[in-house]
Length: 471
Image (cartoon, rainbow, N blue to C red; front, side, top):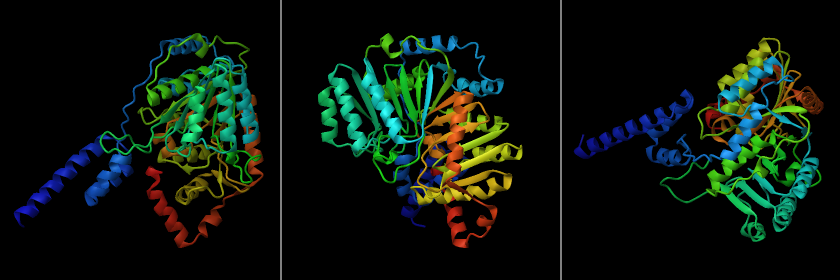
């Protein structure tokens, strides 16, 4: 071996040791860690580039610390000391996100569910039109289509009327918003921000796959919306012949404060813009406490994985039924085990997924988990009429969950997500009714059907499953 070859081999060894040390300290899952080690060992140059783009798990995030907001939340949670309307099992569920630095359940004077885009957008436009102090919006996807323009024009009208409007959109999901679209907003006085925008730089470059997948609208700190719907015609049958089936929720009352707090933290993180607080952002509670709602947020800036652990808790706590709707079903081992174990305990576990999603790779990976779930007693259904984009859970008779998080590693580990836990029998019954209506347009996946799959199909699913930690 020549001196040059020896030197090159030593450099390669040193590179691998440094890279391996960094990867091991990230404390990923074993599968993801091994995958990265192989890439760094056999494709060092490509591996370095890819790792710089999507590798580092740590996200440096300066959290906004708003005393007024903190005090408002603390006062509200103190008022919730006696949760007489919440079952003991639900209190045990609520304790998990609270231990992970999430808010306690808060009172809501109103909770409204929307299962189609047209009524959801109409309610959002009405809330924007009624706003007197501020309108805050955060979205993953905002398209410059019919509903995107309609909502933009409504924001422009409010800003010109003296209402403070702040609009935050994801740098990748909303990349189609052009200069003309944004110029009209800014000229009207709307404050606009990009969340993690794409930038052509290598050093100190943010991860391109750290996205805000949240959908949040807050009007005057009194009315808020969240759920699965972005701002796009594809969510509304009135605007698109191939509209998706989705679920959104409107909250009224003190529970809105938790969504307000999440938006303000994201706004400061994305824009670094500070502003003077007033009581108008967290107004005094009004109306009866008819519902109890707990908002749970999670993202790669925190190690707690609050939504993942909350979902795991409700799955292991369910005693009667656990009905799950998700467009992207690529569960990690813990989630798959929780679903299977619940079914083995006699819980009515049903999982509703699209017949065909918008990603072949994710569809293949999802189908690889179905055989073991069916074997454990989980009933899996494919929704046939159209793409179903709802992310919901119905747990027993008293807990309804509506949010932005899918049952996959991307939502649990990489995206900034938000979900609402609604401890209410009436709302749970509504969500269960929607689930049953969806089942009427679905077909069950059988064990026999899976056994008859060809070798190519099985191989494709097994191969896609290997990439599950990255999906």
